[in-house]
Image (cartoon, rainbow over all chains, first blue to last red; front, top):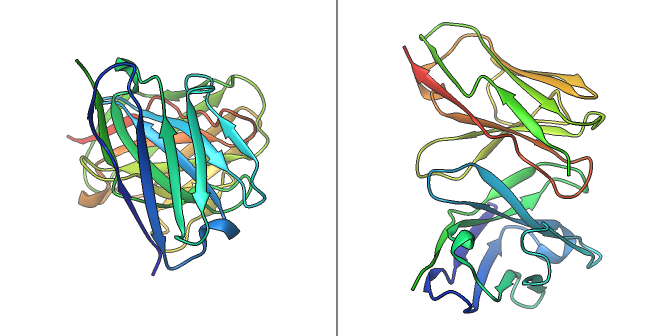
Amino acid sequence: EVRLVESGGGLIQPGGSLRLSCAASGFTVSSNYMSWVRQAPGKGLEWVSVIYSGGATYYADSVKGRFTISRDNSKNTLYLQMNSLRAEDTAVYYCARDKGIVGPHDYWGQGTLVTVSS
Amino acid sequence: DIEMTQSPSSVSASVGDRVTITCRASQGISSWLAWYQQKPGKAPKVLIYDASNLQSGVPSRFSGSGSGTDFTLTISSLQPEDFATYYCQQANSFPYTFGQGTKLEIK
């Protein structure tokens, strides 16, 4: 059974850093395309980043230069390192497995809430 | 960036109704479009991918069509569990943008 479990969210001050983790089971993270998608409270979905099986990474303009997606193959875990956090980064962050290079996000975690506030 | 515009933003319907939601891309995206359903407090769930392919396990009352810039999601006969918010997403080019969502409410 495919399962994704996010962790690492919480309350952080503006300008701070946080690392989100997404532990996967039932499949191999390094063999798949993996994404982060976020949703601000009461708002719609926003795609954040993707890492390809070959290691290439892509980011939304809103997070480029501040967020880094990575994975640990030995732990079968996806990460999102978030630096220079802003109030507008406040959201539930979901990790998702992608069906293919242009495939949909076919499996999602339950999400972890990041609140950026002083 | 490619802008995705859904219409309507909200719709009220009854069990058994046929409902159609439209998604328009600001430029051509071939058939690289997915539809998601999201219920309050839950992660989204993919319904349709590549514009018209039904994701495994999704009821056949859901269907998708379109290519280029104009796409539709149709629910042929609404069931109580279908009342939710629906999003389209393009996967033609980065960033993979979502529509603003369509909230489907019970009439």
